[in-house]
Amino acid sequence: MSVTLTFLGGAGTVTGSKYLVRHGGRALLVDCGLFQGYKPLRLRNWQPLPMAPAAVQAVLLTHAHLDHSGYLPLLARDGFAGPVFCTAGTRDLCAILLPDSGHLQEEDANYLNRHHLSQHEPALPLYTRLDAQHSLALLRPRPVHTAFEPLPGWRATFTRAGHILGAASILLEVGGRRILFSGDLGRPDDLLMRAPEPPPAADVVLVESTYGNRTHPEGAVTDELGPALARLAARGGVAVVPVFAVGRAQTVLHAIARLKAEGTLPPSLPVYLDSPMAVSATQLFEDHMDEHRLDRAALHAMARGTTLVHSVDESKALARLHGPRVILSASGMATGGRVLHHLALHAGDHRNMIVLTGHQAGGTRGARIAAGEKSIRIFGQEVAIRAEVVQLATASAHADGGQLIDWLRASPRAPGRVCVVHGELAAADVLRERIAHTLRWPAQVPEHGDTLTL
Image (cartoon, rainbow, N blue to C red; front, side):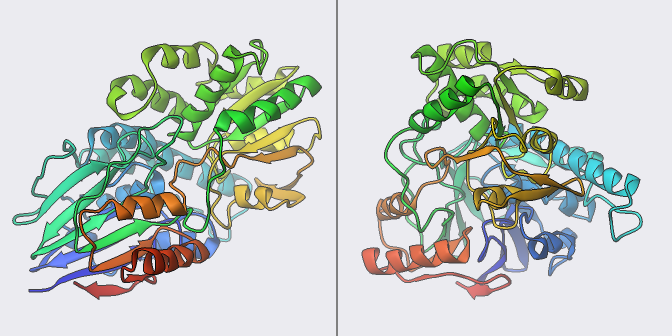
């Protein structure tokens, strides 16, 4: 009896990861992500899946980032009632990220309705905070390195992938096939997270390719961030740092703490973390000490040097401050959240700085800022970009092309097939070529909607 694998996201794009595995009348999703970036991709979030959510019997999550977990509230609202298996770290982060995602979507819809900016009347959120909270009841944490049955006769095992707290690769054994889903792989030299574990043997490997066509530069994030923020402090400007609430926010905070301790930055430079989600995620690092490189002293130093901003009123009060300061705020690609208010306020002043910390998916405001556009649209208005733009090349939480090849090469044996996923087409195809020529393994870049029979 055959096993089929359908690519419902993360194929030819770096968002929306969803892989449908079917065998013997049963169906399981690996990852359940939102599409982000270009509008044609975002519109896919509103299109029905090719099978009813109630017909999906289980979900496996590689990690909690919304492009891997953010569709779950919609799946559950529309009929899915099965278990969602993940690591404990992913469970803890989803409890923060998913309700916040629903809240932001409600806020965005309300804003569009108040200002009559939507073509739809009324504009509706994709799902609500309550939808997200209901979906959390389906999460079933499982330990790493311990096989379990997501469905009768199917076996799954998590191994650590680095990247963020809870991130895992998943080995799925079904119908006599061993399918390995890399998830998002971290860097072996990451400032924050431990290195990904080597892959287990598999017949088919799905490997991410976010940075499949790039090589990360030598050096640490402190080498880039220190001179940039020193310039900012000297001229009395404001740095707005769009951050991913999980991972990049903590990396930047730790880097700033180190730069202050070594004297590169003035200890008095104020740092604000204006993201309730990032505040909560930072506090989780003490609960998962085995997954990252920081000891408790480093965590406490990071906390001492940062003012945590919780309420909307506290966030608004930052606009009334004077003097140099650094404001970290979500989202990391400037697609929504409080960072938009800070960008609207500070992007037009040449003394200020916008620091981009991670991959900026095509079609996002972050990508347009990185490309050097002179203005971006925020809340229906054009905002001039006169601030200095700094894109950190060393802050990525993803393995680069060479590191992905090294991870694959560590497999105990060659797979029969490699599917290159979760990357823009240029990155995915370069990695495909490297796999084919360097490792001499069969490799392909699936298209959205493709189904493979394994």
